[in-house]
Length: 144
Image (cartoon, helix red, strand yellow):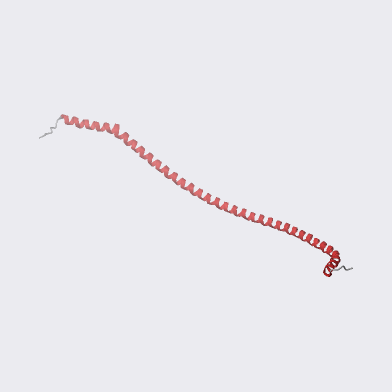
């Protein structure tokens, strides 16, 4: 069987263990805990920065959506205004063309009426000679 003797070496081992524990705590554990604490603080800070940035992005997105909606409304209003102006110009052009066409038609009618009058005058002068010629052809003899 194994027996444990309590002597001076046990106290030296307990002392060495405590000195090693203090040395490891001072040289290894405290710096590592400090680094982990700094890391946790930095992660928390970055997390809050990310959250605030995301909120800023959301707010800016809402602003941009609002501006885009306003721009679309303004564009639609401008398009409708341009359509109305286009319709007005179209009506003006059509009215001007109609008036011009009516004037041209009136001139042509006057010319036709004048030509018909001239033709009638010419035919009136020639009616007697046409009548005589027609009668001669129908009768087959000359008429004086």
